[in-house]
Each structure stands twice: as C-alpha cells, then as structure tokens.
Image (cartoon, rainbow, N blue to C red; front, side, top):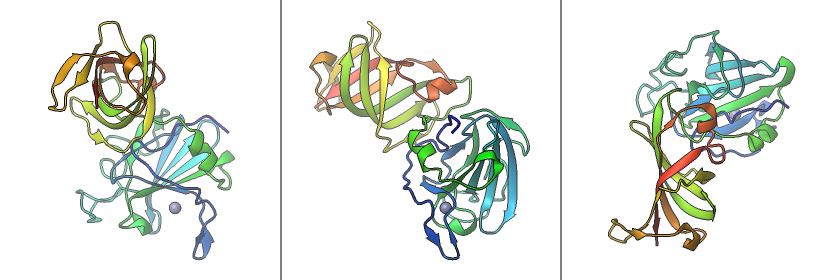
Length: 264
Ligand SMILES: [Zn+2]
C-alpha cells in the first residue's frame, strides 16, 4: 500500500461503506461527506485526467499515481453558487481546482478539485473515492483512508499564513503544547474550518504569550500551561509560517504558537 494523503481537506465524515448494495451493483468506493466545494487533493504524486461525460459520476477525475495505483474522484462540484443549481460545467474553477489542466502532473497534497454533488449524488455533496491498485480492479479505500495523514488547511503553496484556532487543551511538555483543534481560520484570507476534532502539537517559544481569557472576552493575566487541565477551552494564534506540505499536514512541532489563551 503506497503512503498517501487523505483526499479531502476540512471536516469529513465517512464509514466503511465499501461493498454496500447500490441497486444493481455493490459500492466500489467510500463516500466522504464534506461541505460543498471542500478542497479535494492529490493522494500521491502523479498525473490527472478529467472525465466529464458520465451522467452517473458527473464531474470526475482520475489520478494516475506514480506508485501505479489509480484513484477516482467522483461527483465533483457542478454548482456555480452555494445553492444546488447544477449550472456549472466540469471545468477548472468549478469541478476541478482553479488553474488545473487536464493531463498535468500533480504533487501529493496539491488541490485538484472541489467536492460536490454532480451526477447521481445531486443534493448530497460528497466525494465518491475509489482506489485501483496497479490500475486494475477497485479495492476498499477504507484502510488507506483510516491511516492517511490529513491536511489541516488549504492555502496557496509558498504563501505565508497565520492560523487562528480554537479547541481544547490536551497536554504540555517543555516547549510544546498538544491541543485538539475544533475550528481554524487561515489568515489573512482563508476560510473557517469547523468541527475538525484534530489533535496537533505546536512548539511554544519562550516569548509566546500565555494568558487567561476572562469571561468578558478580554485577555487577562499571564497563565501557565502546566496549570491547564485536559479539555480546557483554548485559543491559539500561530506565528506566521510559509505554506508547505509538511506545514499543511501540521506535522508535530512544525507550527509555533505566538499566543495561547486559556479560558474557563
Ligand atoms: Zn459512492
């Protein structure tokens, strides 16, 4: 099994629905339920091919991974607005990521499409995702998905961003804090991601501000992470960081806190 990146960024729910009955056939993938226009990213390095003519699959994409495995991304977005109008064509900027070209090479973690409800998914935005080892028959994606590293956020490669996160305190060690991120805003211009429930480890530089958040919403006196309790609500602002795959994956310690507010 090649190492691969989880194919959707942001809140996702899915179950092991491989093989479920779908009328005249069994389900050949897993359905990843996500908000309309959530970024779909390349699971590994490879080459993409658009497929735009299936009434059932709708706007679809093949990723021919360098490992030899082919991945299918089905029901990409076909809506022009936040409403389900089905007025969008299977083109870059609507179904496929803005600026992406049919046949081009992509890197693992690169955005390639937008989750949607084209084809027979109409009204239920989700990515129907298939895994075809050796470009042959489909296998259950579930074991791949369960263990796949996930991008915490999406931002243009090379751009510098600051992350504003809320969640809860898990634990601390000298120079480190582990928090569970529930909501995340990518500054200056990014979207807000909610319901993430994602544990991450940040470094805490000596000059990071750690304060109590008063009930009035104002930052109060200095606080100690060592006195925080597990589950305590926390907000974290990171230092600015240049976007890279490792940063987007929020590898342990790659993000640094500039300010931590403990409430409750
Ligand atoms: Zn499906």
